[in-house]
Amino acid sequence: MPSFTSPDQGDDLEACVLRFSDLDLKDTRLINPSSGLKAELDVSTKKKYSFAKKKAFALFVKTKEVPARPFECKEKWWKCCQQLFRDRISIHRHVAIQHADEICHQTASVLKQLAVTPNTSKSLKSEDSRNPLKEYFTYNREVSAWLPDISCFSPDELISSQGSDGGEVLLYYCYRDLEDPHWVCAWQTALCQHLSLTGKVRIATEGINGTVGGSKLATRLYVEVMLSCPLFKDYMCEDDFKTSKGGACCFPELRVGVFEEIVPMGISPNKISYKKPGIHLSPGEFHKEVEEFLSQANEEQNDTILLDCRNFYESKIGRFQGCLAPDIRKFSYFPSYIDKNLELFREKKVLMYCTGGIRCERGSAYLKAKGVCKEVFQLKGGIHKYLEEFPNGFYKGKLFVFDERYALSYNSDIVSECSYCGAPWDQYKLCSTPQCRQLILACPACQRQGFTACCVTCQDKGRRLALSPTQSSFKEECECTARRPRIPSELPQQVRLPVSPRPRPGVGEHRPCSRERQQQDFPRPSQS
Image (cartoon, rainbow, N blue to C red; front, side, top):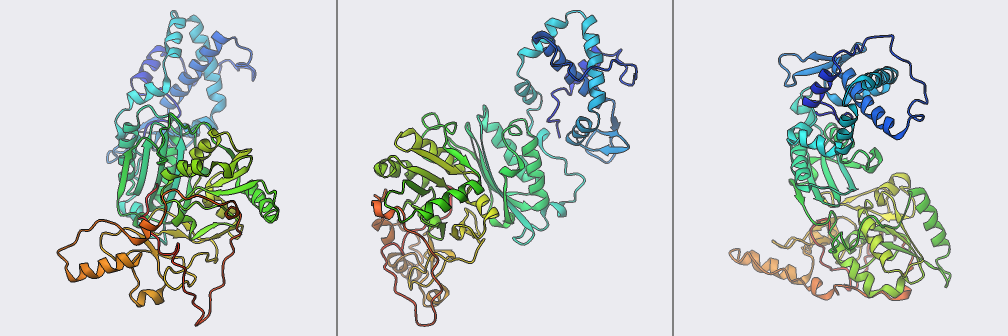
């Protein structure tokens, strides 16, 4: 695996060694620089200092090289402080932490050498004018150079415990400008295949958005690689990766692609940028805001709106108490929803939230751009991070996820009901009618009675198909789909309706549902 901390390796490193061939790295009589050495230098000398430090670090690591064992795929390892290091990341971390003083001494020695070396200024100017990150990627264009070394693990270790009991699912995103998203796509594809991960990764010039599943070893290696890569290491930290029980079984396959947006809002990132979002609130800060909001819920002059940025089938099975949950099928409808209900947000303080935080980044940017809100805040890390800290907080019900699990449970509250009988129920299943990709809520009792489709229209289609299996194709046109407006209009009194979980009714207490919004089309999970 290539070094992610030092830009000097390969031919560049060899040139460095030749240029400073007379420098004895083991010489204990080197200058002992003062602690304020760099601070006291002028601009020109600071460039020399930076150059010298990089060279000193590369040379020190070079002296620790040892041949790898014959059966290993790597040509060299590193040995230092009686420890053996098999990859560049580990040796670089070790040197940076344990040998900072030696690097400082050698930096001073290199500076001395630079002072007597001709054409140094020209060399430094050329070095300074280059883009180290771009140059580094040029030297290591092959994606195979960016894959972790897994030779010390057996294949069984990487793929074992991939089931929901022993495996793990990662959810993350990173907004940052990417010059070559197609290269990142190729790298991510190779990386996930290398670690036997499944899932979905979206890449665009504005960043990356992914959810992948596999063994805990594989997901740990994936996080390490992401946090070490120069493209993302300055933009992400370990806390940006949300984890949950799962594994490779949670996704039917691996899908990695390049798109215009890493979350499809339907508006070009050039028009609404992630760089102008709302104010981020930690789960603790958001919890306090919601607490204050609910305490004022009955006041006529309450100027706060708690806005759910997710789709209706997500908020249906779990949501914050007192939230405004738009009845929209896709996030790409969200901008139109804001436009249609703009007066609702005028002079309001808006608290926004979504699953992991990514939709709020651009959703809050869009709302801010309208210039009608008093303030716009968003939950950092989304519901996922909130529930890790407050499993029994103000979020009630399950957390919908875009994979085969459909939902994560953090508390015992049930806020949704069976589409047919009205009994408390929150476990989604796919419509039983072939080629219909809708999600339905049907309790076991109703399923036993044959109610397994998303609506009556679909149920009839399923019966016809059972009688005529050759006619297997039909246009997806459900009764529930036709009944729902694409962009709903909100009434002011609908903004703050407290949500409280209903107790499970006893025998004989099942209530008939209204069918107004119960038998609805639930799209197959996709991050839209």
